[in-house]
Image 1 (tube, rainbow, N blue to C red):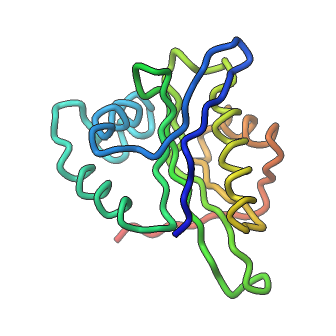
Image 2 (cartoon, rainbow, N blue to C red):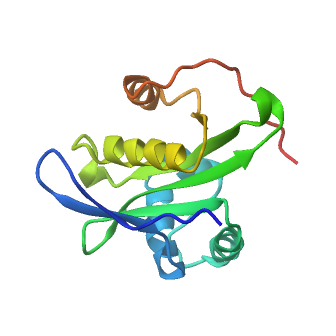
Image 3 (spheres, rainbow, N blue to C red):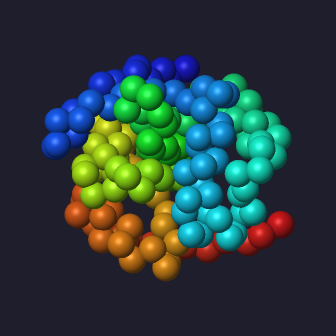
Length: 166
């Protein structure tokens, strides 16, 4: 199993945050972050009405998979950010192991203060520690601010992505 340790980080403004595995009781706060996002609010029907069943079922499945890590950032009181980090071993690229980052969200009050950068740098570092030779992520084409953010971190838009709804 690929374990990830809780990590304390200091943001540029001196704020202390902790990155840790999400717990079932974090699900409502994670859903709040999803709902606060314009795309998340409209595309997957996320609501704040307490209908957490689908999210809790997904969380339970993620929690049992050793290469899945649902991570939250906390400020000591509240969940202020989240992302999912998945380690994938494949045969391509000479059997390389890659990391997939998904569902990156930062609370509005913590945007532009370095939290997103800290979360992604941590995810990249953890990926290297877990023998990944490649970190990948997808971002909706409409998220131009996010694209600039990822490019500043060193990500390159090297592929065109495709999806098929089932």
